[in-house]
Image (cartoon, rainbow, N blue to C red; front, side):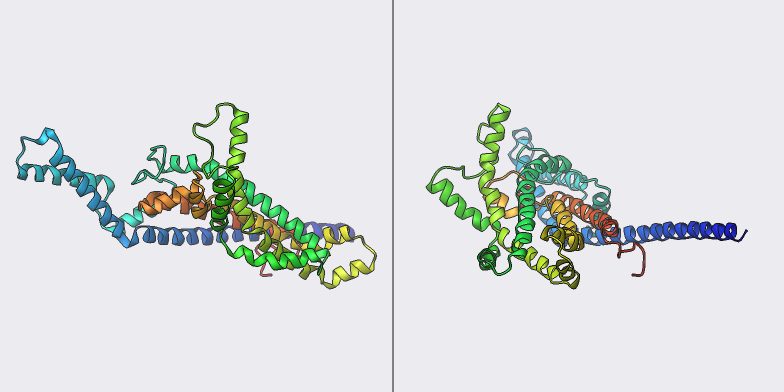
Length: 374
C-alpha cells in the first residue's frame, strides 16, 4: 500500500513538474518574442528616420516632381495653345495629384508611421527611383531578383571561410608555437583591410595586367546559352570577388578561433582527460568542441543571415548584381522603400535567429535552462 502511494506521489510530482516546465517555457517564449518585436520596431523606425533624413527626402522628391511635371507641361506640344497662366495651373494640378498619390501631402510624422506599419507587415510597395537594372518598380521583385547573385557569391565564400578557419584554428591549437602558428599570428593584421581593397589589387593584377580573369560582372555579355558553359563562366567571374572576401578575413578568423580553442584547451578537465590517456581526437571532440558548440553555432547562424545584406562596396567594385550593390544604388537615389525593406527583412531574420538560438543553447549545453533564473 505504501509503495502504491509513493508511486502515485511520484507520478503526480512528475506531472506537476512537466506542467511547470511547459508553463515556464511558454511564458519565456512570449516575453522573448514581445521583446524582440519591440526591438525590431525601434530599429526599423530609426532606419526610416535616417533614410528620410528626418523628412528632407520628401522635400527632394517634391522638387523632382515639380521640376519634371513643369518641364513636361511647358515643353509638351499638346499644350502649345495654352497661355502661361493656364500652363501654370495645369502643372500645379498635376503636381498636387502626384504628391497626393505618393502621400507627400501629409506631414512626415504621419508618413513615417505609415512607413513603419507597411514595413512591419512586409508591404514594401514600389520603389521611388529606378534602383533595379531590369526596370522593375516593385520593391519585393527588386530584392528577389538580386538575392540569388548574393547567395551564390557570399554563400560560397563565407561558408568556405567559416569552415576552413575553424578547422585550421583547431589544428593550430594542437601545435601552439609552431612556425604555422607564428605565421598566422603575423598575418592576422592584414585582415584590417576591407574586401574591396583586396579586390582592387586583384583586378589590377589578374584582369588588367595578366588578363586571365574578367574585371567584374556575374557572367559574360552576352551570357552563354548552354547551362554548363553558363556555370563555368559564372565560376570564372566569381574567382576575384570570392578571393577578395576570403583573403580579407581568413587570417584574423583563424587567429580568433585558434585563441578561443587555446583557452578551452587549458581547462582543468582537458588536462585530466590527457592524464587518463585519451587520444587527441577524443579530447578535441568531447572536451574542446562540445563546450564551444554554442559559440560556433552562434557564429554560423549570424554568418548565414548576414548573407542577406551582401557587401555594398565590394559588389560595387566588381559590378556584381547583388543586394549590396542594389542597396548602394538605393542610398544614392534616396530610394527609401528599398532601404527600409532590406533593413526590416534583416531585422526579422536576426530576431528569429536570436529566438531560435536560445533553444539550441539549451539542447547543446545542459547547464542552460530556458526560462530559468539561471
